[in-house]
Image (cartoon, rainbow, N blue to C red; front, side, top):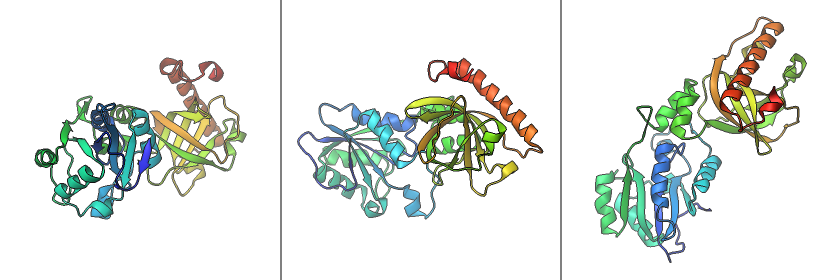
Length: 313
């Protein structure tokens, strides 16, 4: 997949079908919009137009936290099969009216089809799908508008996903995302206390720009060298041995390797308990061992074939 950060002229030989939106999370509703653009694959090039930052960060100076990093967004869109992706600086294009911007897309990129969501707004004049239909028609562009998807009777939205993550409801967040919620961060040196207590952990500073889960302990999967391994993850300020920044601390069940300095990806599943301060090391050890037992039972029930269950028994 080709990545562009401008809207200069590209290959016009086939025309371009373009999905448009910020796609913060690339959730099931976003995927429907993107897949609508990809159905033209073979007859024209297919791509996604998005922005390098949330539009609200430019318009109001404040924006909600991201659900995925830009790199993860690119990886997901690449896996869907897009030929290209335009990641624009919103501040540079915000002054265009919808008609002016559509004229640029038609002239420079030879756009012949646009896909968007029903709540999509374009241009400084904030044109919605009804107005965009007329503008696209005038430029010889087909407009495909996808309705809002629901999950368990709720509208699938980035706002709902952020709320679910903040409440520790990873089943709801994952259902709306169409994949488990997770993040990637470098493994940093800790105080190595877990080793002395019988459950070594990897420490990762939680990414500052990604929506923060409810503090507490989760069942997790950890990607180590391409393999998903079972884990128990505490996210928070670790009140027993406190830190002053959100920390992800994971015991990878059955793993004894060295991951210092590597970027490691986690996926979060069931919420087991709130983070709390322990009165003694024995209390901590007993509680964590109980969480590890819960995790093993969960993996055996739900994850057979996805990780090596034999190694964790």
